[in-house]
Image 1 (tube, rainbow, N blue to C red):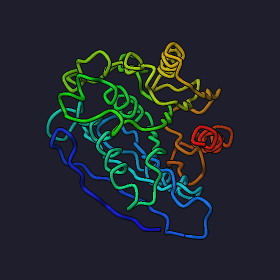
Image 2 (image 1 turned 90 degrees about the vertical axis):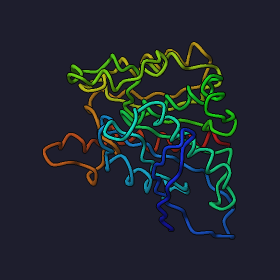
Image 3 (image 1 turned 135 degrees about the vertical axis):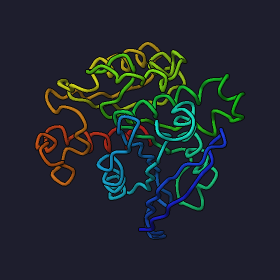
Length: 272
């Protein structure tokens, strides 16, 4: 495995970092090129959750994917979160499409996976990729920047559907675009097929977020597979012992952990 840290410049001229995990070439394998998964961690827009970054990338890597963990624009960075966070995703997709041979990836098998706030970034990026207004303003082509599939883990979709009150002064950091505030409004027939998982008892990002997005996908005839687990709370990542934080033993949840293998089965079917 080769690990590489890169700095890219997004369509708005802002620099951001990505961390790549690439399997070594093996000419004896049947599949000569690999799918790529772009991991977008959560973290309430003020940090990036390590539990939703490298562990997730390595989990997919062990199943034949090349992977990248993406750092995106946070509230303490210069400028505003959006449009830059979404543009970071689109720039990353284009970079790997343009360099598919270099990284031994299939340019038609690029998947984004976003957790919590990262789910908002991933779903925002899909809206922005298909928006003629954003494409014209930032000079990109939808075919170059739109991922082929998307996975959303306990995703923030609608900023107004949180399980707690926003801190005072936070409103100025939030986007005014209605389709960025509520990314379900940005779903179209061109939105990538989507896999969603969340716990019903999530106290942070209310389950209504996933339900609203599923309904938007259905209304636009976009394929979706969804797994809504009874228990699990918020932020369980892979739901395995190695990603459990101190005092949060609930994060070790073998039942919720099934989302990962289910996503592999879904991707195998969707990408073939």
